[in-house]
Length: 414
Image (tube, rainbow, N blue to C red; front, side, top):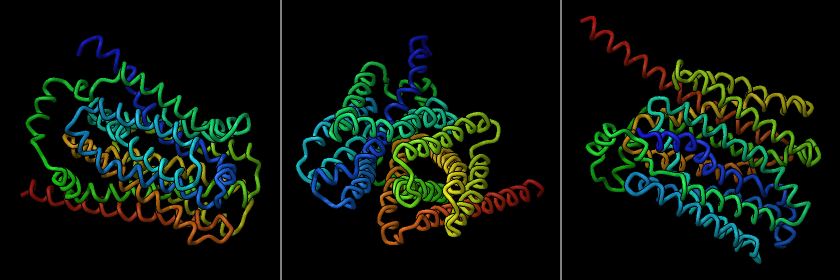
């Protein structure tokens, strides 16, 4: 590896994190402006809230298309396509005249941006290899700065000018990322050593769109980890969808307090990722996933109970903090376990994970709306349910692995 390439790798993780941060910024930055946006477009608040589900759906569908393409075509060009399209859509959003136009452009914005983000996990895997979970944690830890500050930035822009300024600033950020990508981002293949590249060439024979998905989905353990990733996503987007209502309406906190509480939970996510980077190399992704799951079970149970009993806000805040950290640890390690199973199909794997994750995330809003009762109970029970499904999946994996170990041990003794 040349000195020039090593220098570029020092910039790689922050740059990949900046690419991934585009979607969290797009999701979280306009949350404080939702009431103003509804008034400006003369539409019910529920229609503006649905724009979140529309964004998640567009992103998931985009991953289906661009995931296999990331295994076949230049990843750098896909990132440029994705970020460039995101910039254009961000400039179109402030000039829409009705909610239909807003939802359409948001769908397009999410769809095209997936072309950029789908290549990131594959690039991390090719750089970190068996320590993929560590690399993903580093990227996620840096990227988490975006959702932590996004609502506060959105509030400042809204108060200082208008909701339109939020999307102009989003366009400016993504344009800067685009310039950095064009200057510094190598194709992921440039990161791989010559020996690994030759091996990849032999394995990665021409495959059809469907064949790539079949390879990934035919692995039983991978399917269970994919379901784990999906359920954690459902829990996370249940939080994202419900928490403005829970804090601002149910507990009646101010917008400033809401921003602080939202940022506090992002700190929990960052702490979990930092902890993962310290221990995952020694303990392994499966063990770290189980540690996160143990904390998630305790925290999700506590969160459900304090809201069923209608205890004060402090109890909810104390329960959510470890829960958000634990689900992020589960997510990053489940993704790493899946990615390392399919080194020659990282783009397709990312598409499968992302499509199912963002697709089920899009269901969080309708599910919460169906069970709406004016309290925080639907959101807490949905998160509890998601964690319990993860527990079932990981118990199946554990029993299966133990069975295989016993079979192998019996053969060795014979």
